[in-house]
Structure formats: C-alpha cells, structure tokens
Image 1 (cartoon, rainbow, N blue to C red):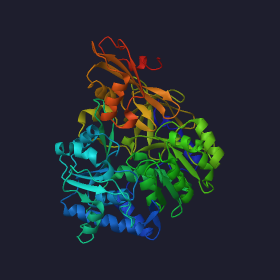
Image 2 (image 1 turned 180 degrees about the vertical axis):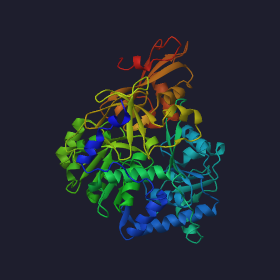
Image 3 (image 1 turned 90 degrees about the horizontal axis):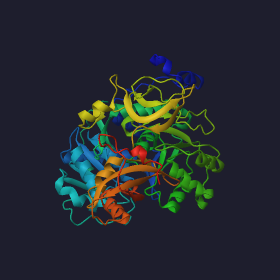
Image 4 (image 1 turned 135 degrees about the vertical axis):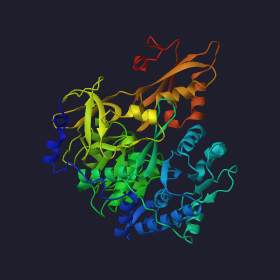
Length: 548
C-alpha cells in the first residue's frame, strides 16, 4: 500500500472545509503567540478564580514582573523550572513569567509523593520550583537530594487582591520566597526580553517509563504553536475571537488542559474560569453556574459526575457549543446523558503527552456521538502498522504511528528510549492500536502497551510493580487494569508472597499509598501462588486480565 492511499481523511477535510495543512511557524515561539493575545485583548477578562478576575493586561504585567524576578535570581535561557500547583491564578502568571525569562516549565502533579517528586526534579535538573504552600511538605522530604535552591511558594489568592487563608509552608524549608513577594520585587527590577525560537524547550511533560521511572516528553515552542494552530484550523467555529468562555476543571499540569484550555483559548482572547479542585463538586457547579461556559473540556469521569449530580440542572448551558472529551475513551451512555442535559454530544479527541497532545478530533459537522476519536488534525499523518511494521488497510487494526509538527523530538536525555519510540522514517509509535474507517475517522480499539488509564491519567504497571515489590513480603507481582464504572479502569495487582510472609492486601495498598499518588494505587490486590510467565520468565500480564 502506498502511504498516500492511507489518508482517507483528506476527502472528508474537503467536504468540511478543513485545511489539509497549517503553518507551524506562524509565530516564532509561544511567547510571540501569547504576547500578541495580551496586547490584542488587553482589557478583556483572561482568568477568573475564587471570584477574582485578571485581565489580559494584568497577566501581561504580573508575568513580566515574575520574569524579571527570575532573571534577578540568575535564571537564564534553557533552565528548567518546576511548577507544582492546582488551577490557581498564579499558574498562568508563573508560566508566562517562566517562558518570558527564557526558561522551560516542568509540570508536576501537586498530589505527587516525595518519591515521584524527587525523580522528576533530579531528572529535569530544576534549580527553581514554584509550589503551592499546601504541598510543601512533599518538597521538604526530598529537597536536600535535589539541585533546587529557589523555592517560590504560592497561596490560594496570589495574583489577585484577595488574601485567602492558605496552608502554612512546611517549617523544614528555609529561605523560601512568597510568590506575591516575588511579583512585588520583580516590579522594581529590570526585565531583559529573551529571543526565543521554535526549537527552544517549552515543557517537560512527564509520562511513564518502562523502568518504572517516568520520562520527560521534551516539547518545544514549535510543537505547541503547531498544535494550537492545528486545533484552531480544525474547529474554527468553536474558537471565536474574544467571545469564548471556558471552564477549566482539568488540571493545567496535564497537557490536555494546558494546550486546549490555556494556550489555545488564551490565544483567541477567551475568558477562562479556573477550578482548583473539581472534586469539591458543589463549588465546581457554582463556577459552572457563574461562568455559563461556551466551552467545557473533561475526561469521561468528569462528564459522568456532572450528569449524575442533582445540582447540574441549575447550570445554564444555553451558550455551550463545545463539550470536548479526551484523556480516556468517552462512553456512549455518558455522552447520551450529556446531550440530554446540554443539547449536544461530547466531541471526543485523541492525543498523548508526546504529541502536545492533540492528534485527532471530531469535526464540527459530526453532531452525533461517533464512537471514534475523529479525524487526524491538519498537517498530521497517521499510519497503522502491524506487528511486522507493515501498513494495514482500511478497517484493519494496527499500531497508531504519528508524524506531524506537534510530535516531540524525543524524551529528555533518553537516547535509548528515543530509538524505540520512533520508526525508521520518523513516525512516533504511540503504543495504541487503532483502525480507520473509509472516511478517515480513527477508532482506538486497544493498547499495545500495558498502560492503564484511570480517570484520564496514565498508570504504568512497571512503576506500580516496582513500588509494590519494595514492600517486605512481596516476592513478585503483576499489575493490570480492570474495568471500573467510575474511573474507566482501576489498578489491579496480583501478588506472590515471599515464603513465610504474612502481609495483607491492606498492607500492600498502604505501602503503595505512601509512595505513589492516589490514582496509581491498586484498588484491588489478589494474592496468588505464581504468575503466568513466558519460557524466558517474562510475566504475561495479558493472561491476568479478566481473571477473578
């Protein structure tokens, strides 16, 4: 099969007025793209949180001050700075300050354990961290073993005039700087603009590794400019300049919300309502009521939670014209319930940390729930390969391999992993199994990798197994995903006890909870006499799936 014959989506593009290509170099960097937005929409509201609003001009001024403070601390082009906080006004200010200082942002889940944080800080080589005060105890545990020397602590109301009572900074940390103080000091300091190009590092987005340690997907400015342009070209009707109102309940440290909710909608002058903790459902619904969003993004569990909540009927969805789902498969029943409430189905997309993230999305013309992840975005080429790396035909399944300007150059300092991650001709191997229909719609049917997706978050069995086997009494174990109505999948662990061990499932779960963030912790633990293995001793996780 020739490669051009494997692009059935091009005819569907033509029928829907979707351009086949975009210009990934329309802006030299993300800095240029966001600077343009801050000037064009200066007087418009940019972010809202805890009832406090920031205009685009406010974000411009405050981020400039933070950039000046960082430069005063010796931060230079190419440095990596960790950001570990929930969705607060300080997040966009910090990010824009970081990139205006020429640095790159390493995104950290604020729920990470000391072990997870230590690896990420060491691997990225961060010397500065911007961290929510409520999770500073995690940093205090491990900071002595890292290169971190600048700790900037964030309170809930930072960036606004509201002083919200916030958790105290852990007493074990000394010499920290309050974010508000950094902004105030930076206002008095000179700022030296930094020349940035598309090839400069923008994000280190950590994702699972085969060794149980996560790898940083190194995303550059061009990757993110490209993905924003691809999304804008694909669904222009959902990106009306200066008119959109988006509610961001997904965490901004996750690449989905970071690219779609923040970068894309900021670039068109949207008003963005930040939800620090969507698990506090009543407060979340209060935000939805106040915002009356035109755009809402979520994972299946978030949509499901909203459809089942008795107060959702209080939300005015009359302005909503896009409900976008990703991170994990959207379930048809949830989309049906969403349509009954809002009048429109959830539009599903597909992406990965390594692809900035969006690879495919359902076009505006698709009114029903398609059960697919849509068409490849413009300038994106997808091929499906069988186990022998041969192209498969329409309706046949194969590994989804992606080439496009949104695909990372590679993992941070991982040459061996990079060799395995790409085909000889430069396609990124996603590890997902998909198939195309005759119109070019991509359906994800399985995963080649053993990755488990819990509420849209990736869980890598190697990491869970590495943590669990460190518990005395565990001889060996194997981790698989199990279907779960609430979270899509749940982590299930099969454990072989060491001779004479008396450990219980509660012991295993408690140990894992100390070492890993909550979504990675096994929900079920089953003790077995032995694990299925190949002739060379490799554990056969596939043989454990579906077993009792």
